[in-house]
Length: 356
Image 1: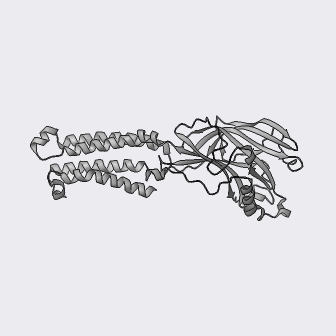
Image 2: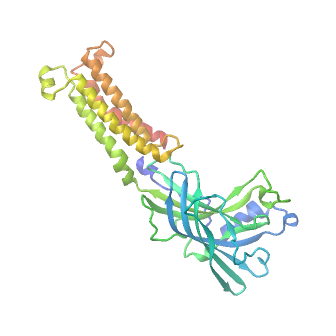
Image 3: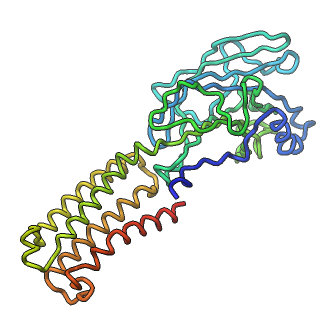
């Protein structure tokens, strides 16, 4: 189940070449727009290259790299940006001290076309799904608007700028990029249809309903080993120590003296293990402020339940309680001891099945 949770499945909405992009626009935009009212659709080839990526917190990611656009004489004359202008907008960018305004990096003439490239650094705020942590994948997207979004301008991917843009290809990102606890999985362009309840004060605004916005998506996969060592391995050790403490429970005086078993000692050991689990849980929770319960947190909840149950079992066994007396006292508390690992592992399987 862990192996299945750790798999990444290719998005069916990927645009792999110019033909697929044109087909999508024809079906979802050109056929829906009145060209006599909104003017003919103007396409601008747009490409992107990421040089660095860093997650600031659970909702913000910082990117830097280059964005370029191709403007053709006679087609883009009215919307072509000047030397001090920028031809694109990143609508999800938030203000940050590390951000810098996009600046023109190059302007190259190719026949009747001119390619303009800008260097950018931006912090983008996005909702990420952490429910399957540490078996989660993150799709970092860069949503790009044309600067002249008041007109019928649509950005199209510049597929010719990349060596290969197939479904499983990784392009538009530096091979030497440092990702820390992440590794590259996939990259792709796609469109998402967006609607707004305002016309931004623009009469006959073209993109108010089901406008195709261009997205560059970068999929990263978390390195499971890091989270396993930090968060899961200590839990397995705590559960093993709790089981070892449970094995010392005995009504036989000789065995009790040999093991040094007493109820207060068991409660003290359980309390120490509880604080170990609680501190690790707090450290984990600090990473996902405002998020729901992530997959690995269920392990901690199960561990809390085990600590309470084992402590209650030992106390009831010591006072020879009539509550569950036959089960707890039978054959020197053998049933809870034998049922410990089957119960723990079956509970983990049930939780994993539920999260999947």
